[in-house]
Length: 639
Image (cartoon, rainbow, N blue to C red; front, side, top):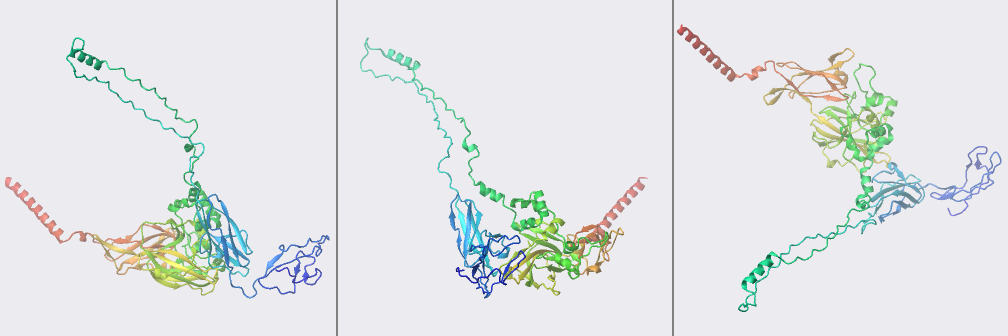
């Protein structure tokens, strides 16, 4: 834009269209250069409305201006420079302007976390769109600040690296002298009286033989004794100094709550810090969750501990899409992903991993755990060796979806994270947000983890829903299933979703032998389901869920069932053992049944009585018999 006229068009020319409408279109013949700024001027008599009122026109060079895009295929993002402020700002600073320049017109955003993609940044510079950008931020004394800036140009070329603006604000200095109004307390000397004994006269040595004019020795001794009992008059004591009045008329400044020895703003900033971003995102997107947090007082980071005893569960995929199974007494059954309608598939939340079992007919019960850093994580519990069908719906087109099963730790009884197994309300809320997907700038470094399995998600029908089927590890413990989404859009990059999986061992049937347990092979384990329509327990139809019922234990005596929610009880039979019938219990959604069962032998008392016990009983019986015979013999002799 060098104030050179490119083309002049008459208002009556055919290049100007839109007469009688509210939109005027101007089609110039000139070819505009790429990456060039232009402006348009319109005369005051160019256009009139229906009432013959003339349009005021455009006379300024900035009223209607624009910059053309790069016709040569611009692929270079803006170059950022001259970021400010930097260094240390004065302690009295409460706000400052973030500023930087770009080599081309651009729109810039900033974030307080590093590695955030441009599209995911929340804050746009207040003044942006040209080559100079600025935005005002609030600061306080004694703190350091770092902002990460990314920009995009007219060709949507966005920066993939961070431009850092770092600075600090000096802390407020302590006063060198007491502030006005301080009271200085006087030092009061302590007066301690000292006892002074009376003087004692010392007898002089006789210089000459006493005469009648000279006092005799007896007179001198008598005078000395008189002086001892009648001492000289003591010196006058000093006048008593009055005690100064120490009670001030005004409350000392130290007790007026006006001196702040600790920075109140910094303490309040820590105590009143908001909830972690992942949790606040949920509350912002879903008013129900925000209202729940308000009612229970979850408003700041120090309130997160209140969630420690919360018992909340996440609904499975079927419950999330179609709700409860119709019918009052029907056996709950999930819906395989392949049988979902297009409308249901559209409702599946993105970037969340769902787990299903029983050939996709049973949804695993999931819980939400929040770590000490405030990061929400999914968690499921399954039985060793069971089949897991994983389902995930990416938010955008992806190049690939890969999964890794890695060892995490042994099952621990203590829990260092905040368990939020969520109720239905929180479950529906959580699934609407992408809080489980974390941006991953670099590939998963599998060499740092004990990777047990690497697998690929597939989408054979092209509906955007990726599935994978794996086997749960055999060894009990806590594992992590890491799902990596690699998007086609370089701006989105790569994200990973972590699903913590607790693998419990299978249940087993055993016989107690002293302090040891003997596994029982060949036992028939059956599970019975309460048919509420008939109000009686019936054998659970396991074949509908791709399982077997009853199950026959092998040499290890193990068994396990993965059943939908309902009321059940277990029954076990084995040759040589008493039949076992357990107490009824309730199963929540997608929970495994794998408790250990002890069987009693039919002739259990044979294990208690051995040949030594039998021999001892015979000896005791023989002795009692002999004692009885001797007693009878004695009576006969006495007769």
